[in-house]
Length: 77
Image 1 (cartoon, rainbow, N blue to C red):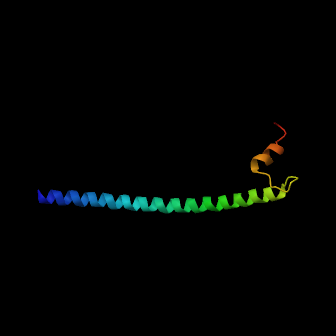
Image 2 (image 1 turned 120 degrees about the vertical axis):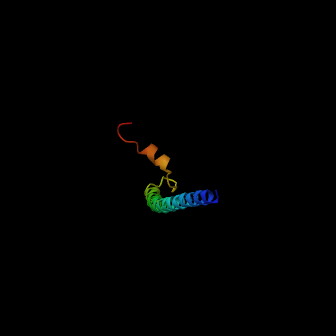
Image 3 (image 1 turned 60 degrees about the vertical axis):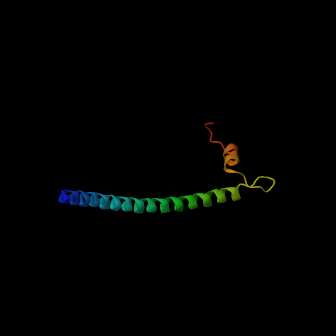
């Protein structure tokens, strides 16, 4: 009976070690995705800033992206 408990504990431990490794790999992959998304977000923020700087309204205030889109609708609208 003692041997059966030891086998069950060892089996559970092996399963948990495997799950820890899977979660570690998943966390690593998600970290890479987050870094990529942060870089893309930074580039997008820079582009929005450039557009706002280029599209100043008459009062010298930068147009918001919504205002810019409203004033520059595509021809099919």
